[in-house]
Length: 300
Image (cartoon, rainbow, N blue to C red):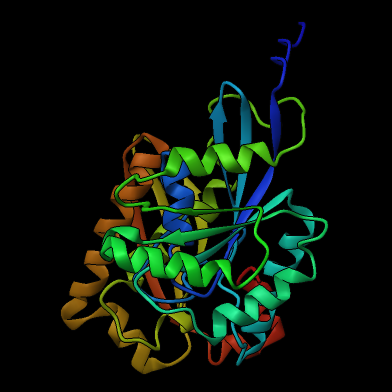
């Protein structure tokens, strides 16, 4: 069977979004792909894996690597998340540096910009002003000027992922930085993450919403088994670090865990296209963020 010819001028390659935690990187990835491939949350440090989303265009294919937010680590987990970011920077063809329009540029942004300067000579960096739907036009203008002063960017573009504003333009600008070449993934593929990873991420996203600020860092999810049948049965375990956190996740009379299961199942069924029975169990893995053995067990 002969392979279809690659159109003339076709480009394909890898790009990633970087920035402080909670500046909209995952939402932006989902907007460019046009489907949910990265979990989002109002809590910082939601992303822990470099999830790839794939953008298919007639003139190119863009593979987006969604990295965790670069931050000052307080645990072994934090150090490993930062390692994921820096490893990703070294492997992509272009980088989008995200700064939110609803906040002034701060020390965290300057720190990341300084780190990016070291690779800007060999990897093009685009400045991306996110969340422009949250502020007035004059504020956008101020933020763009401030962003321009941070580094030498190949391009600067203001976007709103939720409002779908200049998302196509950002895709154009990123694709222009990709090398000429054939598609790297089959047409129709939206991500190369294993199903179990995506399922675990959907459960974690549901569990993150509406909980106390300290819980996101302490919460991990592992899919233990998937049993096919008329209804696909999935058993997943939610790990926290303390008994007090376990009671938060479960809620009064199990109400919170039931809500988590309902929300996660809706996302999983949409992804898999079939009915799912989701069994969730909450377990305590004491101080797992600081324990190398437990980190390995939980996939870090």
